[in-house]
Length: 239
Ligand SMILES: COC(=O)c1c(O)cc(O)c(Cl)c1CCC(=O)Nc1cc(O)c(OC)cc1O
Image (cartoon, rainbow, N blue to C red):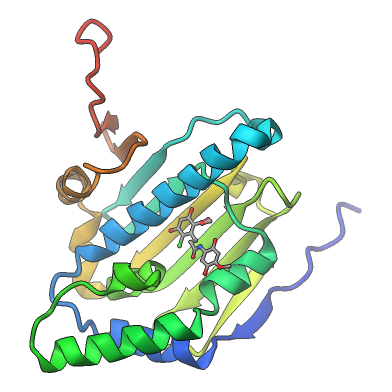
């Protein structure tokens, strides 16, 4: 017989503050939903920064020898966006700590700030300021899958959450096709009304807009092959 079956997915309840936060976001308090891409590119960039910084004292972290970059793939027929980075990734516990809970302090302040800004009618983007950028994925997605591999663990884990759900699941990644050497891959299953975000030209426009301060190359994938979005003063001869 083959390998033993993988352990079943484990179900976790969100911390109450996370549920409140997600309700707020899912009810799309934010008129310009574009911010989801800025937040997710920012998270990917932070994870790459973390890896680069830690690798200065621990070169083992780079043993998977993959380039430090961000790849954004769009599937416009099925309304799916995939954002993959080769950053530090997360262990199972970090998945629970990072995506299932948020620091209480930040949340209370965030919720208060949003309420005030809502009352004040000024719809500014508070999401990024409180480290809750991940949940902005639910501005445009019914379901989000986060597959992540940290150099600190020998397994890759998959977090799965849906909008308006009170719980999420975490399981081991066992499908060889889905394995990544290191980093995090987010798969966004876009809402019916937001499938337009999966059009390559729309993503490319948003990436150009948000990638100005990102010090890693961002590639967007489309039918015709890979287009390198961020021209890092490339020598024309190499182009
Ligand atoms: C380490 O960050 C990631 O793996 C990562 C990524 O590469 C891309 C992403 O879109 C997201 Cl959402 C993540 C996770 C970011 C995150 O929430 N990190 C994080 C948050 C915490 O509250 C924390 O506290 C222990 C630790 C974290 O790494």
